[in-house]
Amino acid sequence: MASLWAGLSFFPYQPMDWVWFLALAIFPTIGGHTVYNWALRYVKTMVVSVSILGEPVGATILAFLIFNEAPGPMQLLGGLVIIAGIFIFLTAARSENSKAA
Image (cartoon, rainbow, N blue to C red; front, side):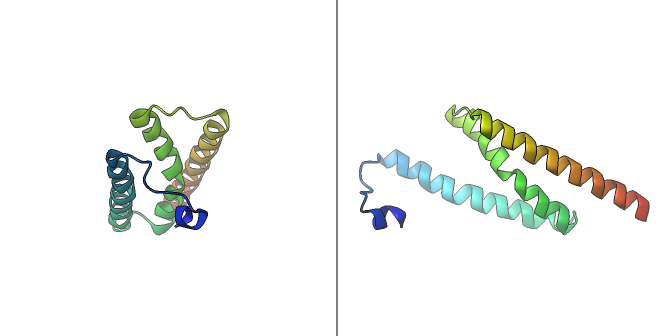
């Protein structure tokens, strides 16, 4: 929609690019949401909701492995902050669960 609004053409892209665009739109959405819904059966809702914060970190890793796109220093710093935050939350949640048991 943004391309249409900006008056940009869709046609400079090769057909294989459109296949990649479609695959990137469908597979992460279906796969990701399916995994999160499955996890809700086995893991507390708080843990699943906080783990969603790791999506950009995983996307950055996949972009590096698949497309050879190296993250910049700010992306690396942001990824470390996100991973540290998830780790702190999971550690606190685990100690809270062990106290309650």
